[in-house]
Length: 422
Image (tube, rainbow, N blue to C red; front, side, top):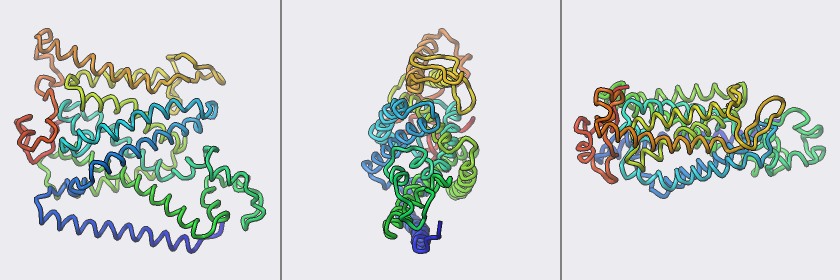
């Protein structure tokens, strides 16, 4: 395929413009920080919380709903024995979960001025929150290669897309590309740029590539910032060095961005393909994190013992249902499944089952643990996870730093609300 010189020029200009915007934003944020009482870390990570609630809600819901759809069809592409329709149960499940993420979770987190999604876990669950922090970091790391490789695998491992259909039915003899077709030449991974370059006017091709580049950059830098925020706030500041200064944290953030960027990029050559990585991220968020987030934000009864049991229940059930990406066969055969080539294929919505069982387990075991500790049935000396020393509730919405200090008298009001040991 010939090099598209105008396209290269436009892309270089596009990236330079993005780079220049970043430099301009950096200088502007420093000026705002000096003129106001804005916290340096909040300015760096959250833009001094300048994004409106509506924009934040739409950003979260759009990202996760889109991810739900893509992962659902990725499942069908990764498992050829399943049809597209067999994966639609995941569409419904993910859309339901991610709409809630955008429309329900954004406001309580924003009103409590949390920096990351992990803050409420560290407040209520103490050291155990390390489990969910690690899961979140792994998800952010894996999200980078999936977005970088999104174009080739999502639009063209999957036939029912407009551009893919055009590429298959096009008469390539009438183009400068000629015969045989890109798919017959084994260039299916490059079908998008080939199609734009040969079947559309130059300005359409440039706009198409630029749009995809912008979307991929947006998702990739979101994953980088999320991972850097989680590590610097919930691990480095909250656990390793509670006394770290804002300047020190800024250096940590920059270092983590580089590490996650390099590590994520190296995963683009993952043996089982980027769709497998995408599917892993979706399952981790939906099965393990989603029920935990619901409980920690909206159920005061939820506590550290219930959280641990909920996680163990969801992990055990997920492994029993089989995890073919990791070569784990299904031990628990749910209704509707069948054997294909000697392997049991689950057709029951097992991810949703695992999620719901985790949700129920968190609430049930939290209630039982609190009841037995409060009534003295279990002695205080057996409280290995420090349930009796941890807050039973999150700070009220709209709480000031003074209110949060009252909630945890040992917490410096200038520090993030989280446990400092792990």
